[in-house]
Length: 315
Image 1 (cartoon, rainbow, N blue to C red):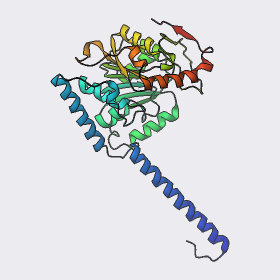
Image 2 (image 1 turned 45 degrees about the horizontal axis):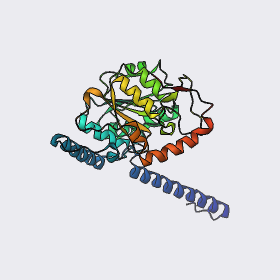
Image 3 (image 1 turned 180 degrees about the vertical axis):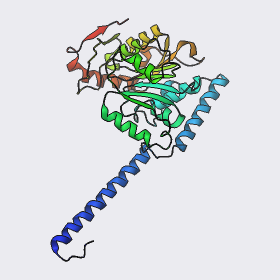
Image 4 (image 1 turned 30 degrees about the vertical axis):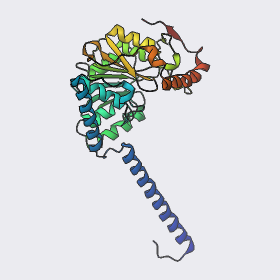
C-alpha cells in the first residue's frame, strides 16, 4: 500500500486493493465451481473413470450371465452431457465394446456439455466436433488444448454450417467416416435430413434429437439449407415416430430415449445384443417424464406451428 497520507491517494489505493481482493475471490470461486462441475481442463478424472469402469463391469456381468439387462432410463448418468446421456452411452458401449473409439457429433456446442465429451475425456476417444458458432469452437479448442488428458490428441473441432450436401464430406475429410463408432446429431431442426444424408455411413450407435412435443404423428420439418430455429422455442425438429422409421430404413434398432424423450438412441441391427430391450414409440411417449416434457415443448412450439414448414410421413 502507498505510504502517502494524502486522503485521495489512500482512497485510491484502498479501492485498488478491494478490486484485487474481489477479483481473486471471484476467480477462486469460479475455479472451485469448475472443479465441482468437472469442467476445469486440469481437473483429475480418476474418480469419474473408476466409477465408470465399475459400471461397465456390472453391465458386462449381467450380459455374460444372461440376467435381465436394465432399461435405458435406469442407466442415465451425467458427467458432461445434459440429460443423462453419458450413462446411456456407457451402458450401450459396455454391451457392444468401445470399438475404435471414434465419434462424430454434429452441433456439439463448445464440446463440453455434449454427448461425446465424456468419451473423449474419460475413455480416450477421438471425435469430430462440429458447430456453426465460432465462439463455441474457440472455447472448445481452448478447453481441450489445456486439458491434462487431451492436449496431445484433442478432438477435431470444426466450424461449419451443416447441410445434406456438406455433412458427408465433413466426416470423410476428418477421417472419421470408416470405421465410425458413434454418430450424434443435435441440430434443433434438420436432424432427420442430416441422418438420412449420412445413411452411407455405418456407425455402431446413433443418437439423434427428437421432439416429443410432436406426439405420435410421423412428421419432420421440411428441409431447408438455411433453417434457423426460432429463438423462443427450444427446438422444432422431428417426431419420435418419424425418426424411428428412418432408423428402421437405415438398418438401426431403436433402443430408447433419456428420461425427457429428447435424445433417441439407436443400435445397428447386426450388433443388437440379446436382452437389450427395444421399446415401442407408444411405450416411450407414455412415460410420465416424457409426457411432461412433451407438454412443455408443445406449448413452446404452438405459436410457431403454422409458420413452420412440415413434412408428414417422411420416407
